[in-house]
Amino acid sequence: MERILGLDVGDKYIGVAVSDLLQLTAQGVKTIKRVGKKKDFVELKDVIDEYNIKTIVLGLPKNMNGTIGPQSEKVLKFGEKIKNKFNIDVIYIDERMTTMSAERILIEGNIRRENRKQYIDKIAASFILQSYLDSVKRGN
Image (cartoon, rainbow, N blue to C red; front, side):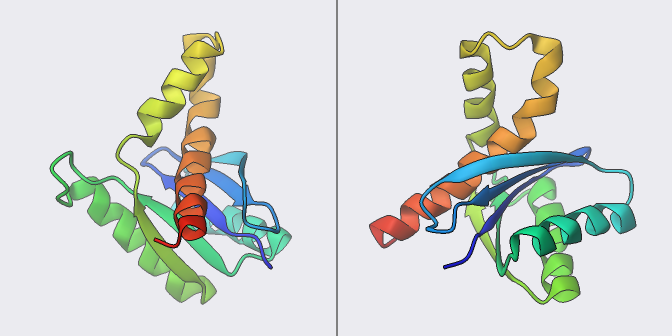
């Protein structure tokens, strides 16, 4: 089996998570601070190469009513670029509550508000990837 990459793509940061080789669990690995498409893609390529990634799961931030808004459009464009640039499979999953869930975990862990930013995106990426892994296990 191979590892799968999970991404939480935002305007300022990209949260990055990878699965274990059995595709049972997701672990947050890093947060990429976005400084420009070229540098963002260099950092992503490093992760893709390091973990020998063939599939990426992208969180799609749908509106609460299930429609696609401007942020989702950005993620879809980003996914197309990844697919074309790295010749890699891209899967989109609904990520509607992942950032709020990540925030709640950090609050429960007594992480100070000013320190949460450095963790929240990679935890959200872990939730996105774990949701996908769980749905595959259930056969959905």
